[in-house]
Figure (cartoon, rainbow over the protein chains, first blue to last red):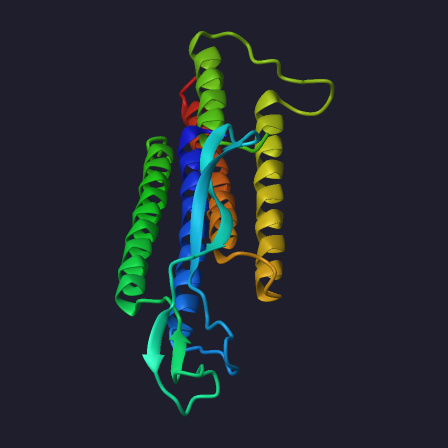
Length: 136
Length: 104
């Protein structure tokens, strides 16, 4: 495989990783208000996705893969809502540790990385076809 | 190994060089036709294989089993391989026609 098609393959692995990140972000955003329905129950816990570099033997290149999805162990928020079924004896409920602003910034970053990888594919495709056009 | 456009160009280059040096091409190779014919046949077969693979990935994507990015990559690879083979064939055929037109 020549280097230009290799770089497209690596970029497509990067796009896959970033789309996973977008998926996790959307999960966090959509569950920003998911609460427990019994006292003492935990609400939705924010998920995190981490990448690592993997040497692809077949491709002879290093590409990103999703390591695993971890959970954000930061403390939950607290809200006074005595009428809620999950309220404790003092009338407080725990709210998810999701900050929609942080999630949106994460989403934007993933979008930009995805676009950057798309540009890599576009450039390598363009260069390949221009090289073939040299024959014409 | 997948057909790559640099390989194809190298093959074309070596074919052109042997013609330029006046070295006679091995016209018949074990009764299978000329070296050029087998070059075209082989690269066309590899291009076809890539095309079949891309169709396979497309079918998987329709069933929701494949990644959209895999489809794009497979289709782009198949397209590029076919494009390369067609360009080289055109080029060599036009060289052959030039030779035919040569006044004796």
